[in-house]
Amino acid sequence: SAAAALGGLPDVAASPLFAQLLNNPELMRAMMMADPQVRAMAEANPEVARMLNDPAALREALQAAIDPRHRAHMLANHDRALSNIEALPGGSQALYSMYNSLVAEPLANVEHDASLAATTDDAAYEAAAAVPNSTPLPNPWAQPQQQQQQQQQQQQ
Image (cartoon, rainbow, N blue to C red; front, side, top):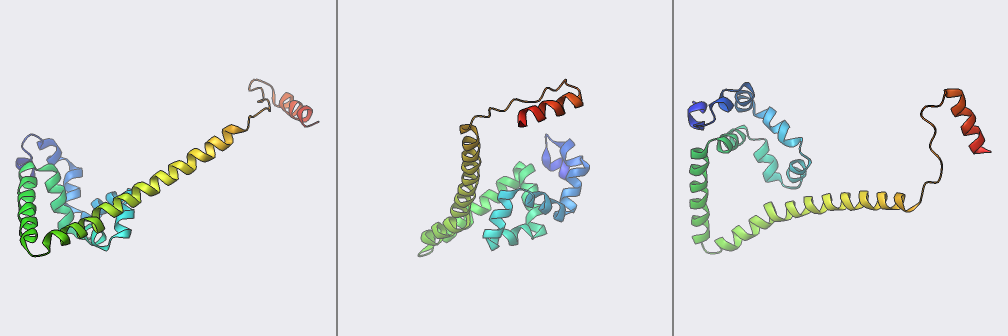
């Protein structure tokens, strides 16, 4: 059972949310696609989009995230597969190319887009702060009629 696989975390495996995530990969996919960075990577890379649409891959990823033995087994299989590819002629170059196209470039693009958005927001804030606001604020305790009179006096 999932609770036995977790060892020290039986409450997590017994939770309804965990059971719902394991049995409903569409819910897990929707939760992941709510993150703008994951969505951007899926739009930029068809391989990532295919993985997010594969219920078996999502279920296995969730199990690996919570079960250390499953994660260790997956990592050992992954390391063995990479070693086998690297042993082929041109395998190292193929792995390097695949890493750059699937991991490094999309992450750099997402980081660059996020830094541009932050820079734009900072520039707009600094531009607005550069011009001092000299208009007095209305009295929050004044009666509504007094506020209207004050505004009319300021406009004249």
